[in-house]
Length: 245
Length: 327
Image (cartoon, rainbow over all chains, first blue to last red; front, side, top):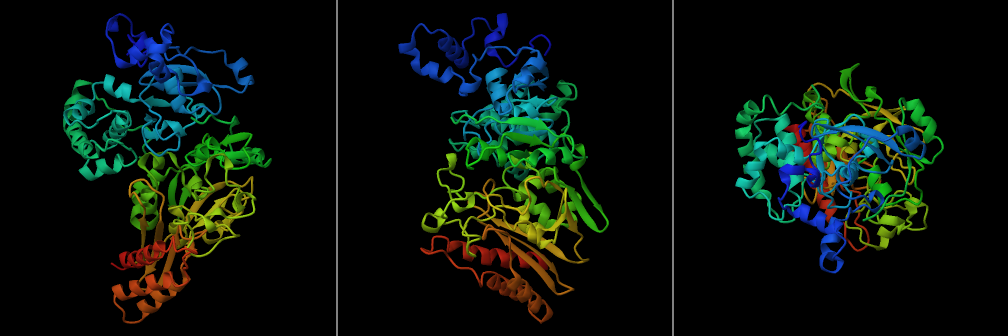
C-alpha cells in the first residue's frame, strides 16, 4: 500500500475519496465543525474519542517523536506495523493497543464494547499471527509487532468480506470487525476448517443481534474462495507467524 | 468509561531483574495481561502497583518439552499452544483439554500457563470495581458472600473466612497429574501451590516468579480426563470442573475438583472409592458412580442453599471424569 500510507484514516484519503460521504466521515466532519452544536450534539458525542486521556481528533496523524525527551516523562515510543505500514508513536504505559489503534492511528475497527474486560471479542486484532484482544494488550509492549485489523483484511479484498455480505452475517455491524478478524486468524492457520472449527474459533466473539447462525456458513464459503484469492494476491495470506511449528 | 490509574512499565530481561523490582511489594508482574489488566483498570484491590514488570522479553520461558520422565512447560507458554500440542494431547489429555476449555480463543492466545495458575478469584464481591467491598480477602472484616449472593461460591467451606473459589481450569488438571511448579526460588507441589496468601491465590512470595510447570509422565496405560461445566460453554469460567487420572491396571486414581473451594479440591474419598472399585469386580459405571458419590460426601451448601446446585454438578463431573478415564 505505498500509494496510500494513511490507510485507516478515511478523512485523509485525499482525491480518491473526495466527494464521497460515509457515515464516519460525516460524523467526523460534524464533530470538527463546531458551528452547529445544538443540531449535531449527538453526532459530536459519537465522534469524540472515548478515552479522554488520549483525546485527540481522529485524523491526527501518527508522527515520529523524539524518543528521549518523551521517555523521561514516563512515555515510551513504540514502532509497529499495522496493515503493512509502519507507525511510530509515543504511548503512556497504561494505554492499550486498542486506544493506540483507534485514537492515535485512526484504525477504528477494533471496537470497545465490554469496557476492557476481555469479554466480547469486538476489539480483536491479529498480532504476530495470533488473534488477540487489543483492549487487554498494553500498547507499550507492542514494539516491533505486526498487527492486522479489519481495515487491512477488507483492503486486501479477502473473500471473508464478500462472504459476510452474502450471508448477512451481521445486523447492527458493531461486532462484525471482531468476527471477521477472528475468522481471518482461523483461515490463516487452517485453510479448510470444519463447521466445528469455525464455531470454536469464533467462540469468543459476542453479537447482541444474535447473528451467530450466519457466521459458520459465511466463513466456510470464504474458505472455499481462499485458493483463488491466494492465487490472485500472490501467496496471500501468509501462514501465522506466531504459530508453533 | 473508566480511566486508568497510572503506573510505570518496565521490561525485565531476566527473572532476577524482574524479582528485584517485585521485591518492593509495589509492583505487579504481567504475562498475558488478561487477568492483571482487568484488576488494574477496575481497581479492585485496595493497593495499586507503581510498576508493572513485563517478563515477555525473555524468550526462554516459552516451550513445551518432554525429558527426564516429565513434561516441562515454560511459564510464558500460551494456553492455545498447550491445547494444540500433539504431545500434550496424547499423553497428558487432561491438561490439553483443560487448556482448550479455558476462556475464549483470544484469551487462550494471550494468556500463559504461569499467569493462569496465579489468577485471582472471580468472586463478584472481590471483583467489584473500586474496591467497594473491602472483603476479608483484602484485609477487611467479613466475607460478603456469606450473607450475600453466593450461588457460585464454595461448597467445601471457607478458606480463612473467604468463600471465593479458585476459578482456574488448569489447576485441577495439574493436581490430578501430580505436577510441580518450579519458581525462581523453589519447586512446589501443585497440591500445595494454592495454599492461599491473601489477596493472592497462591503461596508465592512477592518476588517469586513461576518459571516452569513440570508434569510427570503418567504410568503406562493410565488415562486422564478433564470436564468442565460452565454457564456458556465457549466463554465462561467454570461453575465446577474436574480432572481425573486413573490407572486401571495399578488400581489407583487421582481426582481433583475445582471452582468448588478456595483451592483445588483433591477428592481423596473419591480416589479411595474408585481404587476400591477397581480392585474389586465392579464395572466402570459402578466405579465411576462410587467415585462421584464419594467426591461430594463432605460437600455442604451454604445457608440458604443458593449454591446447592453445584454439589450435583460436582458429583456428576467426578463420575463422568472417572468414566472417561476407564473407557
